Length: 320
Ligand code: A3D
Image 1: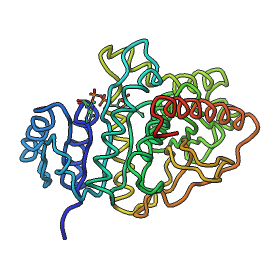
Image 2 (image 1 turned 45 degrees about the horizontal axis):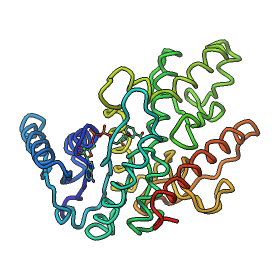
Image 3 (image 1 turned 90 degrees about the vertical axis):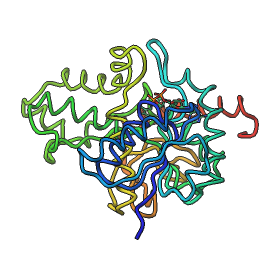
């Protein structure tokens, strides 16, 4: 039996971290692709040389030739540009849309059977465009955002409650932007919902509101600190969690930007919703019922995503 093949399109900050994690976890052999000659080759060799100390068996190859991703089981896309301080994710739209066109064509021509995870921002619009350009089935193309946003929420909650983050579950839905929807009601410490923990005096509503806002601003907080780019460790870890769920048929329930065709009352669009990921890709969208205030937030997030998709159609008429 051969090892799975994982193609990473974009060998920048997230791409390099993805390659290192995939190798350490022995998820498969890794191909790092980038247009910047030398970067993918250099990172692949550097990571391969960490193998003897770490003790992993995985082959790593760096390339600028799409032919090398042939037959990939998973493609994770980070190609494009990240934010700088003062920029919103939406400011990246024009540049990254062109990148999605070339990446989509590369995947269509060389790895049409792959499970594709998009990370490039603005996420919900880019995963839509990548699906359009690649022509792959909708259940095999998904965006990573909810796992990361939920992980940030979980981290902040575990610090506030002084409990292991393993016991904190949290859910963030909607688009990956300022309008994302952290679902307080569905977030728990070992099954105890956050509103109950407020009633029990574990925290106050004001503190919880501040954590929700910090989660929404989680990406900008890191951009502000780094100044030269955006977060990459936690984004890479989140995408690896999704790739592993697919490769090992784990049937994980993870919030992802998935194609909704009726679910959540949406007809034909990508947005962050709870999904089940297994060997069939996105095997199911878990259509939870939202409370009135949650629905209002979700609707405004959906409207923001629709605006970005319309902007893509305006820039590239082939998408209209
Ligand atoms: P960076 O370190 O700049 O890496 C991007 C790489 O893409 C560079 O090495 C480029 O050379 C390469 N690239 C550019 N154009 C192409 C092309 N046409 N084909 C192949 N490669 C190309 O950025 P990064 O790794 O920090 O971030 C990558 C993307 O992820 C950005 O768009 C970020 O905004 C986004 N991001 C998303 C999240 C989410 O949660 C969704 C979180 C963090 C970053």
